Image (cartoon, rainbow, N blue to C red; front, side, top):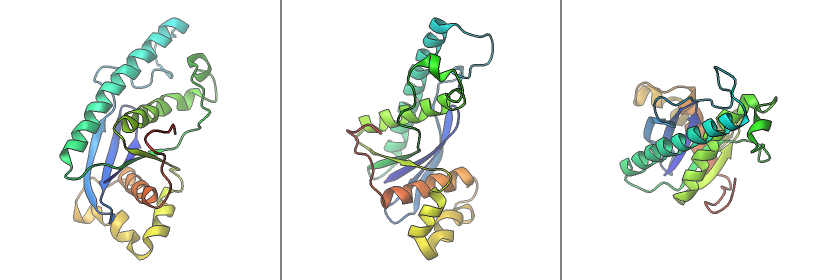
Length: 192
């Protein structure tokens, strides 16, 4: 099984697909525990100094790791076959790790989103799942090239056959599983 993720701040759409590109599971998964700020770098409220911000980010990352781990475990246990890969929206490999740098433009607007993807990748890697990174702007067209005359059936028909919700996020996550099936994925032991 391949899982495609379309993430947001604190939650994500996860679509699991079979090798023949059929939806096996679709669900919303939680990526952070309730009550935690979902965007610590782009934190709204009183400005935090360096040490306080680092502490907040550490707390949020720990919360996100716990919640995401529980969500992935729940997903994996609901499936009849093992997950072999997870697809996540790509991020720059040279994205700075220093929180003070992340607080500055152009990084601040992307830092929180990248944090969620990095945690998802770390947890997937720990489970032995391959990591596939995709470009949100092109993944549906990549999938369409692979699917050819099955594009509408696989990417659009689930709204009719499965019922709502089947949104752009679901299509993108499904397309990412198709792109992953036809491309090189990063082994679980490697760093994306």
